[in-house]
Length: 228
Image 1 (tube, rainbow, N blue to C red):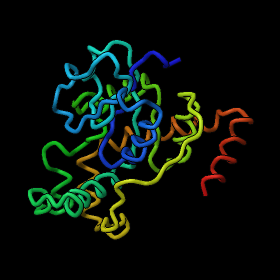
Image 2: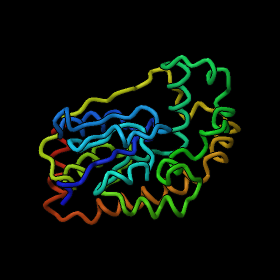
Image 3: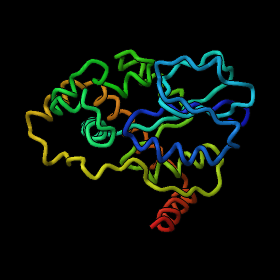
Image 4: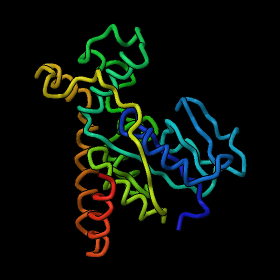
């Protein structure tokens, strides 16, 4: 179904995208994969006819010139994603320009609010457009249901066995339960669109799982057991 289309991974920061990228990479020959590090760059002119997969922090709609293409992405609970993103920048990247801010301040900095919505719309804070765009994606998964997401993308893409390890796990990240109510409120206000988008996406994802046929449900449970 998607054999002759370029796969574009809309990798939203801190949504288990690095883990999924590693899996996607193994499904192509190295010369067929193009990786993007900065979503602000227009890299279409650098992509050749051999490219079958574009990985990295891509925004939706950046690759109109590539011809037939499909999009895949992962979405995460917005509060957890912002917390993870902040501590990743502060302790893993050691970025003092961001680390000098508190978590609540970080959540409100220009460019960071509603990041999931903006990646899905091509950098516009438009919830309706984000939902409409997601409906056209070949696949979107939920970070908190990563194993189930892998199963569904495997079925969607017709891939065989999948093996993975978690990447970019930050041991210094604080758990949501330890964050003050005031800070959580700041994050919620700054990411109101993302919260609504995530709620829609999670409900849609859960419905997909419920609607699996009995054989696929058994296959999913068996596969989950094999990963333990």
